Amino acid sequence: MADTTKFKVIVVGGGPVGLTAAHALSRAGIDFVVLEHRESVVVDVGASLVLWPSGLRVLAQFGLLERLREIGADLRRTVTLTLDAHKYKDSQASRVVNQNHGTYPVIFHRADVVRLLYESLGDADRARVLAGKQVTDVVVAGDGVEARCADGSVHRGSVVLGADGVHSATRRAMRALAVAAGAPTVNDEQPYLTEYRTMWCTFPRPTDLGTGESIEGHGRDVSVQCLASGERSWLFVYERLAAPTRARAAYSAADVEALAARHADLPVSEHLRLRDVFPTRHAAGMANLEEGIVRHWSWGRVVLAGDACHKFTPNQGLGYNNGVQDVAALVNELHAVLRAGGGAPPPLDALSAAFARYQASRMASLQVDYDNSASFTRMSAWRNWIHHLLDRYILPWIPRFDEFMLTYIMTTTTRNCVVLNFVEGEEPFQGKVPWANAVKPPSIKLNG
Ligand SMILES: Cc1cc2nc3c(=O)[nH]c(=O)nc-3n(C[C@H](O)[C@H](O)[C@H](O)COP(=O)(O)OP(=O)(O)OC[C@H]3O[C@@H](n4cnc5c(N)ncnc54)[C@H](O)[C@@H]3O)c2cc1C
Image (cartoon, rainbow, N blue to C red):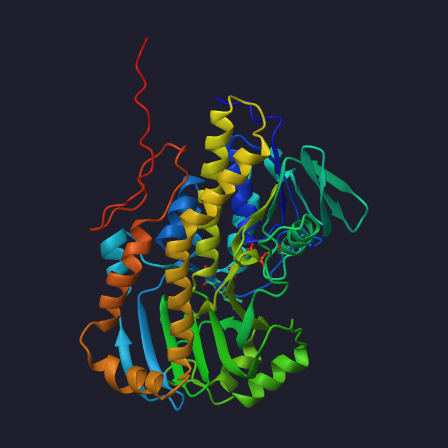
């Protein structure tokens, strides 16, 4: 096995993707540190996370499947209503995901997933996750890189992995390095465009919404989603902005209240309205829904993953799943390049080639999921008359249209999803569709 002790990855961001990277790097035997801006890695921010088979398979390789089953709920049914609660669709299409790939999509409270990722790291790996470290700059230093933090600390490593989300400081630093080097290919300063925003809240599951059921309310320029697990529900109101923007938005509690008041009549189940559940909320928040795929995911010794390099609207729950796929694809490349070098830290050209292969391998399925998410958001919020006509009057009457879409669009990207190709184990899920990249079977141990 390669001696990877001299090679170290500085992961910027201890969110879901940064912590996923910590697990994957640990499995690859690659040294790392995770620098997280917040004072604590496990904080109850954000709403839900739906994990699809592509994400669940990789987390299963970390040995987390049993715990994930305990804290999640299979998503099995979606009822679609007009905004005045007239029901026009009742779908159990997610069963084709189970039939094809061996598991339903599963819904979690986001903080529960982050806690599980953090707490399931071994003691030594958990000690590599440092909170209260806001990375302010990344600089090239000899044959390595330095991440500089607001508290004055400097962390040195071989490469920096930016998993620091939509407003990534790593992405900014990477751009500055490329500009300073006169690179012909430089990313835009603001690579994402926002056309929608969301107000979300979580509250106890309403009695008329079963575990694993969800409600969608569709209307002109506004839509609503409410998803339920055993105890908890998550509600998302999506609202189209007056004009698309690249500016960063910050919303206050007063903004949340105002939006909830404006949309108090939106349905959250067949019998309840937003005004009935909003006062019972555990937490609420509001965010712009940036969209885009960054053109260049790496420069020199800096590489990006997750929301730092692609951002989807969340209606389909595909953002983190793609972040998990990024991590698996990237760590496979790093593991291979380290092994090929027989233990020596790889030279820059070998790293650049590995980063280029990583991005290239991700593009096809990422684009499908991105387009799918963007269309779903616009179809639900009746962006134009064609969306309205299709969503309300045509598609609901085509028998099993949702199942057709899930089979013919999602199945290709799902069957091609990657796993950590150096981790041996049993295949956690088997459906009708064979995996293009199977989990490496356990090696046969010969006695004597
Ligand atoms: C309302 C909503 C619902 C969603 N639902 C789903 C879903 O169901 N399924 C799904 O797959 N995806 C979903 N997503 C998308 C998903 O949340 C993101 O894709 C995912 O969180 C991206 O993870 P990340 O680690 O890349 O970024 P983030 O979650 O943004 O985490 C980045 C981390 O980096 C830290 N950080 C930032 N800057 C610095 C810095 N300078 N130095 C150090 N640390 C820093 C942050 O504090 C944070 O902890 C949803 C998104 C939203 C907005």
